[in-house]
Amino acid sequence: MVERIHPDPDRWRYHIACHIAGSAPHAGFRGVPRCRSGWVICFIARKSVVEMTAAAQAIVLYGSVARGDDDSWSDLDVLVLGPSPELPGAVLASLRDDLPLRVSHYTWKEFASMRATGSLFLRHLAQEASPLHFDGEGEEMYEMALRCLPPYQHVERDIRSFRLGVKDVLRGLAGSSPPLFEMSVLGGIARHASVLACYLKGAPFFGRQSIPHGCRLLGVSDLSEQLVSAHRYRLYANGQCPWPRTADRTEADAAASACARLIDVMESYVNAHTN
Image 1: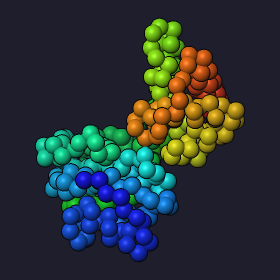
Image 2: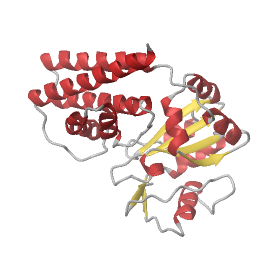
Image 3: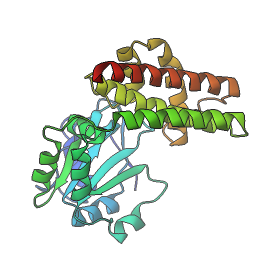
Image 4: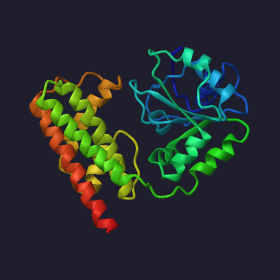
């Protein structure tokens, strides 16, 4: 079931907890920060989340709804942590394609491995996530994993991946791949590269505005508009924004060049600060 809930300041936490639990809130559920947008779309599959609480030691809300910059196209991003490597079958059966609910599921062992590499996703959680439910040792384990994260260890690997992604796009454009598809790929590269750039410059930022932030921090603000435009195709492909407009080969080539330049500047910055 999809519900639209108006974020009344005095009733927001109560309504969200009731919606998830299907009853009056109880001690296991945490409050959700009131979002700043006028009408907040809370995409929660009630049955799914109730089933999750039976198998999860931690359920955490993150992304645009947790940040408070969600809109009517936003997904509800939920992290589920527990000892089981698989979600219960009842949860999987209740997750329908027509519900914009995105569930990320990890075991504590996987979560610990992410911590060991200084995962940017864990930094994302530490900066803006809002816990919804803890059970057993879940709260202690979750908070311990996010405490004093080590430096991110996959910077060079990520930069190589971004560069390979741009090369793949150029090969696709040289063949018969639709520019619309390749623009969505470039948009994803631009977003992830910008998040990494923000981290490298000591100003972590994970929202949709990460592209202009990253470009500004690297001194390439002239790329921002073009990369933000490419990212709209990624959002459209994910069902998170309306149709941008048809992209042609020339526009896709220009976006690929902008991505390549962003990656070059970021790599130069990394080399200058690691040698």
